[in-house]
Image (cartoon, rainbow, N blue to C red; front, top):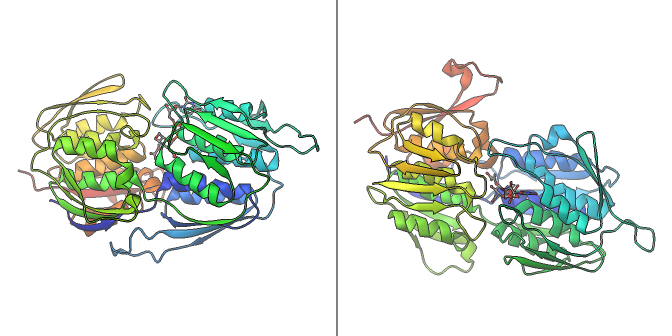
Length: 461
Ligand code: EPU
């Protein structure tokens, strides 16, 4: 069923997470508005509470009304106790992004102890570059019981304070987003100047730099591979509205595209989506901005899709290249294109767990190493499928919308980590997706709260 109607894009999860950690850099209140209501945001709140931060969520009046959707919640954070230094394993392991407390903790408290995060479903995820950057700022590092312990050097007055430095932060897969966030945040309070070469250029880094500058930091070059940070003595509180989520926007556009629908999106960060819009255009999907908009990161646009998509080549790359976080959703789209497509994953070469599940729905995908060759089929067929990570779950939801018959997506908690009730948004524009307890599906659930999504596709032809 083609999706039609209007939706507002939510605030960005990946921008909000490192922004929450900046509360550790000051004892004044840090208020972030427009934050989506997500499991990962709540987990970050818990990490910060353990580190002496008071965390208040002013819930948006949650509503199924698609016009109210996306207004988000505001979070007030205030550090009142700076004695804790330790982000424990049982918290870090549930959310890898909690590693972004490392830089702020070290910079302000002179010491940080953070459990080494393990791998995750999308592959091995080292933090060697984060550590390289923080050590270049003078930190001493050791390991203790699986924790990384970092200590800042003493300055002439005997206080522990990082020292500005020139740092190359590139790795075998290019720049690192959270690594850049960590080192940039830490350098704001260091003595002297820090230059980060091969910094991540993602718009979430620009948003973080804007917020830090509003707190009194002196960062220039955000959005380019060279960041310059002049260290300051202290930072103050701030109120900051988080940027809209370009990955959610892309996912909604693709939901319209895979159903041959017509969707109007507001609060859409089109300006940060050039590579995605380019590939969509090649597939035959028109994304047309509506009217002039003051802020190109909060634009309004109309999406319209052809009956049959054209095949394309897609390679994921650091920004401004095609984002890895939209690879799985794009691959779902291409399973229904008119011909052969090639998707190459250059950021997380193992991030293909969705392929086996899409194959269960009738997709024809041949994968070799970081490359998948997709031969478009006429139609997909609904099936029970397993979500393995956040973006893979989203790709299965998209496939389920277009498939003939019913698709059950198990382990939907992955989806809830990064999409605020995606099924409510899609249902508001014509989808038919139901959330059910696994218990009611007669599935052997490993937790009483386990839930699945049942997506009704088109009638079997
Ligand atoms: N890498 C290293 N060493 C490091 C850090 C990264 O080799 O110290 C490698 C990674 O293994 C990967 C590449 O560098 O091959 C890029 O990783 P990056 O550090 O940029 O990833 P991240 O900062 O941990 C963020 C997003 C991810 C997104 C990636 C890439 C957040 C909270 N997470 O992760 O988002 O995929 O950037 O754009 O911002 C998601 O939202 O689904 C998600 C996984």
